[in-house]
Length: 496
Ligand SMILES: Cc1cc2nc3c(=O)[nH]c(=O)nc-3n(C[C@H](O)[C@H](O)[C@H](O)COP(=O)(O)OP(=O)(O)OC[C@H]3O[C@@H](n4cnc5c(N)ncnc54)[C@H](O)[C@@H]3O)c2cc1C
Image (tube, rainbow, N blue to C red; front, top):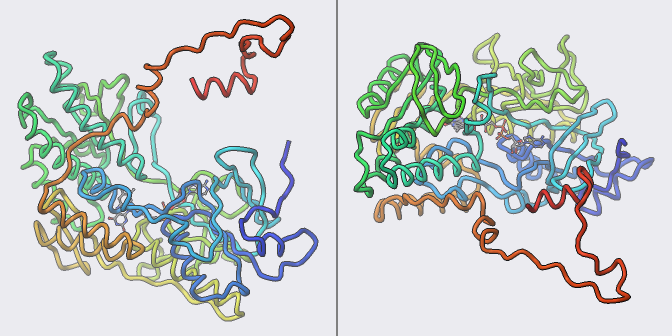
């Protein structure tokens, strides 16, 4: 049954009261979908520009934090504490209401969005202005075995899982004499040679080699890292020369690279490539690109062929004829924003644009709310920096300046720590790096974290059914088996 439109969704009483049906809101409500890079920067800029009587701001996200994704490879490698690559919403978004839940439908014509919380029924909230910053999801293909075997690399939970999984596989390999099992455990496949994939591969490989030094039973040569890339080159974001240099560095590290090659299948960990190569691998990390958040398909907003919200350079949503859709704005990975420095093209999906677009959107929306003119977003790409493990990196600045090795690695760390939101996180990250210089990085896997109840479950003693006292009636009956599909059956399945 559809849930009625509700306005009582925010924690702020002023916002909720101002939004009572039938009464025009005294304070316009801006609802920001997604509390990632775009969402966080838009909300903060808007709050900085406008007082609480000028705008009520609500951010909706299923996660209680914004993730700074460029640091995920270092988090997976243990060079940064994963907690420090996220900015907690409750701390970073002062004076802003945060709703934890997934946006499941957008009805812009009715100025409402449906939110599905982790627990409980979906509900609707209304708004006056909408900002869409829902980001992207991994772009996957219908490859046999991929859904069961693959691990994505888009969020901090996956980065932690990759780290624990890789270190755990090394532990398992060190505890078996079965040569085939050892081989399978020590083979790690990465699919996708873009920035995220190459950084993840290089950082994780570097970490695995550092970890193996502590294992007498495993030789460095036993570690097998494989990169599969469908195009003839890696790092399309930098020049061919720098991409070639990176390739050379990875090959020197014994990383096996298959270009112009596709993953055909990986059922039960048996990897089959389009170049006829076949082998077993326990670990397959999928980093082959992103696509706009599919929840946008459940909206009446105009989308392009790639599922992105269509925008003009002022970050206002526009329809197929270029007409502005009133009160709707979008930016970041989920939006097709014209790149004014490259006419005919759109801004690439990266953090460099997303955070600047977020700030620009905050400025533009504050102008709209003060009846001023919006301005166009224009940003010339300043370059790209990538870390390839401890003290190794590549960078290309302002199109021409190419830097390699230690200097590029320093540039990468300095650029990203400066871009990391909140001073709290910048200081923690820098302190962690300083500590690691003296104490070396941590190489322990806390794999059991993924099932914290397993040990307790194994140790628990089943409850004995209580004897029925005469006259106690139904009250003392032992628990009955629930009907399949009933709420009781679902709740016992959850806790099983
Ligand atoms: C591993 C990796 C490395 C990267 N390295 C770099 C780099 O070095 N340099 C660079 O410039 N860029 C890099 N990027 C890309 C960059 O991080 C993204 O382009 C940028 O974060 C996009 O910002 P966004 O706000 O559009 O999306 P995001 O920051 O992803 O935010 C989207 C938000 O929407 C939320 N959300 C999702 N679904 C829903 C829903 N249904 N309802 C409500 N909220 C929802 C998410 O939880 C998230 O908080 C990297 C990305 C990855 C994955």
